[in-house]
Length: 130
Image (cartoon, rainbow, N blue to C red):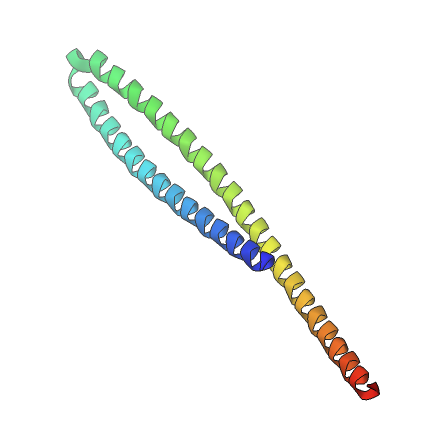
């Protein structure tokens, strides 16, 4: 029972980690979309700077903010990739532990069967001599 509970808990952990990985992938995709939107906006602002020197200071300030946001998003993307790698490693470790526990459970069941067979043989011998 304990092994089954441990196996079930490990399966739940794997599922939870997979869900986290999916969420991080979704966030990464969202960040990429936002980054693309930011770069598109940046290109529009560059055009305005070239064609309207009176607004260049205002536009340059906005552009710097967007560059900072891009850097922040790129950093967050790197962080998410690092976390995804960690989750992947954890998933592999959990799967390896689950495989090991499953093998150990099979060995214990086999040993149990052998013990029961031997026990039944002894009971039969005892009955013979009674």
